Image (cartoon, rainbow, N blue to C red; front, top):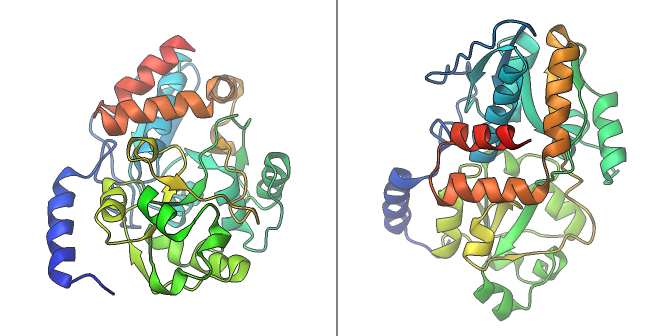
Length: 311
C-alpha cells in the first residue's frame, strides 16, 4: 500500500462525520436483527393488511423502501419500516424469519446470491433465474424499468493517465492499483473473484468501504483507492466527472429493481400498489431522486412521498 496508516485513519474519522445516510447510519453493517426506524409505523387503515418494509444499508435502498411504504399506506395497508438492516446476507435472513415482509431488490444481485454460477445477463433471463431459485415463501412482483448496476469507476485523471475505457483495460495495471468497495464485494462471485476470473485482474489490495456511502467517493477522490465499486445511479459519478468503465464481458448482470415479498402478505391491494411503483420508476427519475437525497440532503421519506404523490 502506498498510503500511510495515519492518513487512512484521519480520512476515515473525518468522513465518518459527514457520510451520507438514509434514515440510519450507512456504516452500520451489523448482520444482526433489523432496527426499528423512528416514526416508522404508518396507519393506513388496515384495509390491505399489514406489511413490514425493510431496506439494505445504503441510501438508495432506503429511499426505495420509503417509496414502497408510502404507496402501500396510500392503498390502505398498515406499514412499518425497518431500515438500514445491512447487506443482502442480513436482510434475506430477515425475510426468511419473518422479521420483515418486503424489501426492494435488484434482480442481478439477487440471482447471483441465489446461484453463484449464473451465466445469463439480460433482464428477462436474470429475472427468471432469480424466480427459479427463490426460497419457499418468497416471491418477486413486477420488475421496474429502473436499473442500478454495480460498476467500476475511476477518476478522470486515472482514466486519462492509464488509457482506461473498460474493465478489461485494467489488466496490465491492476497489480499496482487498490480496489475499493463494500465488504461483501470481496467475497461475492461478481466481485473480486469475478474480476479475476472474468478479466484476469489481481489488484494490489482490496479496501473495504461502506456500501453507497460518501466514504467510497472521498476515498477515490483522495487516492486511498484507485478503482471503486460504485452504484451506477450514484450522483457522485456525474458531480465528480468519474469515468464508469465499460463491462464488455457482462460480469455485472441486469439489475432491475423489483419488490421481493413474503407470500404471506401478498394480496390484491398490496400487489397493485407495488406494481404501480414499479411501473412508475425509471433509471432517470431514480437518479434524480438520489441527487435530492445524497447531494441535497433531503429526507428520503419526503422525497419518496413526493414521488408517490405524482405517480
